[in-house]
Length: 317
Length: 231
Image 1: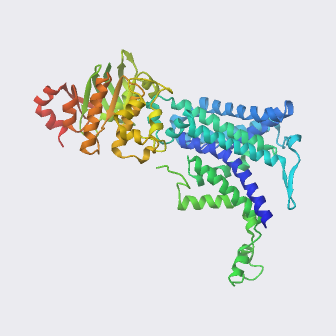
Image 2: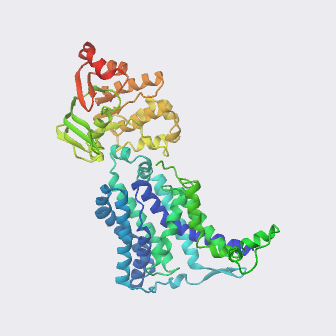
């Protein structure tokens, strides 16, 4: 049991920080620009593919630097020459624009790299078991993912709370017009944030793409979860996104281990399940571990009903 | 210093400013009076580029209408909005630091000057902007714009909702600003303050200027007050 809890905690941390890498950009872009960037997970996918390309030619370590930078530039290009022009037509146009970008990127990836997964592998240097405790193995690459994620978090935290650009971003979250009339170029700040958010999502792709699978479906697989994180955390709140990332990760990680069903719980209270074979019998026999996929969305739906601003959202509508 | 001619502005289809003209000279305090909703704040926003203007806004002999707000601010125009717009999650000091156009900027007013003039703000440098009193927020928002060293500043309803003692401090600060060579356009409802500190006055009614003159001219013309100001 202790082993399960320890392992689940580590997995939660790794998965949670990976989610945060994606959701931090998305929530800042929403908070600042009011744009729900549907294409955000595409940047994650591009990060993985760029890293695959760079690592096959030069190596994994250069890929760790160049792939996120490349994705950041793609983000800047999309903001500067696409989104900024669409901005004057309102939020629906912006949402549709990012929706279009999502599919364009998806089809481009299929055109260039094909429909099948590419062989983006964990670097040999990190492909070994770091430690094995109580029969559970912990790979060196997972430790590396943890290291990169924690460093990213520290750098982002420092950048937002200690640098001048970070303060301008924080101020623009609540009063963009005032920030502009104090002489700061707000559209330029938007562009940096969009590019930075894309680069962070790209970084998540670099370290997650080889651990999971690098394939054209990866954006669609992870995209919705990132939206859940942003909604649950409170749109525009970085702290909220952090807490929600860990919460959603814990929910999904721990759910796997619970092979308990509703009827088991009912039995504890002395209530017996309906007769075998009936619909209700089947429903009550579903184990919690099988609802893993549904959990985050159920959480989001309940959140929207009971606390629409999210855990830390302060946004007034 | 500032010359506005035939300024028009729209919110959707509503024609809010209908050919406003006004002038502010160097070192002058000019008040813009009028009832709520006649377009005084919109005039400030149109000058600042926050509402897209039609017409001419010349500042220090150059046309600024059509520029982005940050570019207008960099030319030397400052704006203190009615809602104060304090950054609530940043400290008092950080709020002031964002008033600087560049890190370490030294102009007519420095952050140290602000703390000397208002020791209360100096004592609360690390308190979040959202947690200081309304009066302190008003001082902070004016000083935040001042440390950016504007040559001309528009201050929208600075005494709104303040206690009499604070109102006095605000009007002293405005006079201090003008003495330092910064021209002021003051949007006010409280006639007593506007009359005491302004060199010239404009009265707005339904999107246009309906009176323009000195203090004495204003006091002599009782019909303006009756028709356009009294509720």
